[in-house]
Image 1: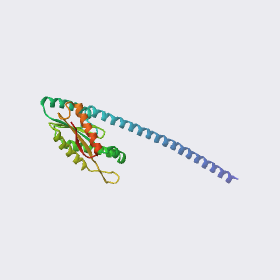
Image 2 (image 1 turned 135 degrees about the horizontal axis):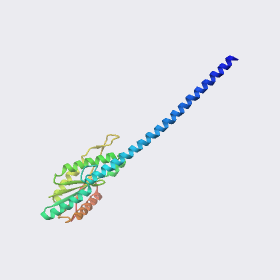
Image 3 (image 1 turned 120 degrees about the vertical axis):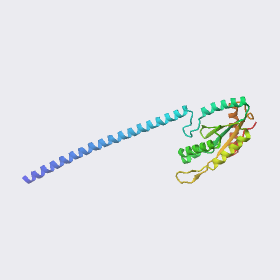
Image 4 (image 1 turned 120 degrees about the horizontal axis):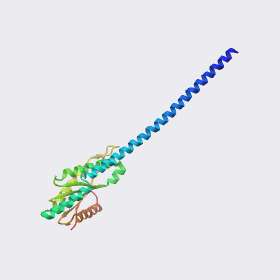
Length: 229
C-alpha cells in the first residue's frame, strides 16, 4: 500500500513538472511569435524609410537638374539650355542641331530581362552619348527610352555624322542576360533637326526632330533620319 501511494505521488509530481515545462514552452513560443512579428514590422518600416530616401534622392537630383539614373542633365535643364542656345545661334548666326535617340524595344527588354537590365542599357547608352559628343554640346535624358543632345555650331550634315557614330556604337554595346549570360541585342533609332534649316524656334526644332524620329521608327529600327524641310 505504501509503495503504491509513493508511486502515485511520484507520478503526480512528474505530471506537474511536465505541465510546468509545457507552460514555459508555450510562453516561450508566444514570445518568439511576438518577436517575429516585431521583426517583420521593423523590416517593413525600414523598407518604407528606404523608399522615402530613394524618392528624396531622386527629387534632389531633379532639383539639381540631373537625371538620377544616367547622371545626365534632365529634361527641364535641357529645355532651358535649348532655349538659350537657340537665342545665341540666332544672335550670332551659327547653325545648331538637335539629336533625338530612342533605344529600340527598351520596354520589351524591361519585361523580358527585368528593369535592372533596362536601367543598365540606359546607363551605358548615356555613357556612349556623352563620350560621342564634344564638351560644348549638351547630352541629356529626355525621359523613358529617349535621350537628346544639342549639337552646337553643327548643321544637319554634321549632325547626321554624329548620329550615325552614336547609332553604330550603341549597336556594339554588350549587355548580357543575367540568367544565361548570353548577349542582348541593343540598337537605337536616331533623328536630327537643325536650325535654321528645319525651324527657327526651340519648339519647332523639337517637333521636327520628333516627327523625323517617328518616321524613322516606322521605317524600321536601328537607323538615322534627318527631318524634312
